Length: 182
Image (tube, rainbow, N blue to C red; front, side):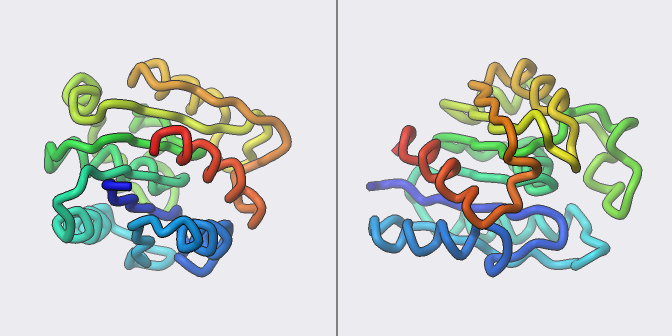
């Protein structure tokens, strides 16, 4: 496979939490090129720091990039595309926020929502957008996934009973979607 997969984890997560260890094992078995950088900031993250790390990871390869964001990582992926205007082969958003900054600015990461991203610009920067969201997501309302998928013209894949995709077994669903674009 001639693509580089960059995962952008969510708030307070890391490469060692949630489904990342499980998906790492599977990607290693498949011999795929990927990275799961541990993003800085802990409980007080800042978007500029996350975007710097994403940009550094993207700069390490000349291969087409697949960006996979989970939760707050979905917002970071969209901010990255908006700010750096670098093309991605595919963007996979798992339990994403919509682009409504007034709704999402509350909480411990307000600078991720200082401005709405330019959806029309972003749509031109990836060949394909896929959104995965569960109807019972306890952290980010399912409707936010519906909203952002409509705006991006993304394929929306709806699940039931997967919550916010924290379960270590969530990697199966994500791997299935990833394989569909490899």
